[in-house]
Image (cartoon, rainbow, N blue to C red; front, side):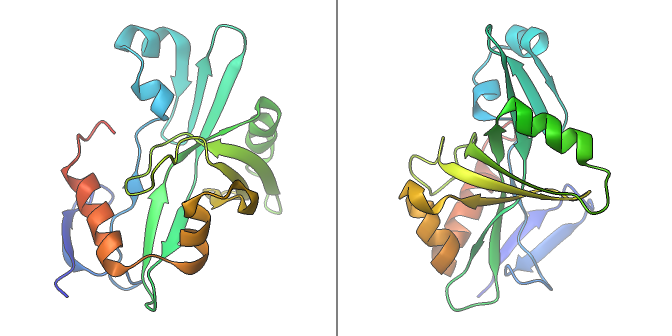
Length: 180
């Protein structure tokens, strides 16, 4: 198979024929901010939010909504390839503060409940899917769909998706507006 060609924002190089393996990975499917942030006008973004590439706080008028990013990986059926999303997840303020407080501790391992805050391409109704956020010290958290949610993402994370479906999802993100 020819694979996916893309310009890598991380290293600045063009990658050709990426097949999703460790030796030749596909690009991450990243999201710039949580969906609720992207739906705000620029004035609201400026006055009601504080964010970095990994963390986001949004004043909802009553309290503060807390978001973070992490890796959600889907295996490709019968291959050693992975489709990796980096979605935003909403977590409780208490959990957000715990993560931030303990981030630098070498033996820290947080385990939190949250909900997806990014619309994943190819995953219908993925916004608000319950997830677990597993945060090892000093590394981006892992995002795992909650088994009890009944969402198709649970099956995909456990069993995998076809190569054709993985490449379709990647191509849809590579063609999308870079703000999403």
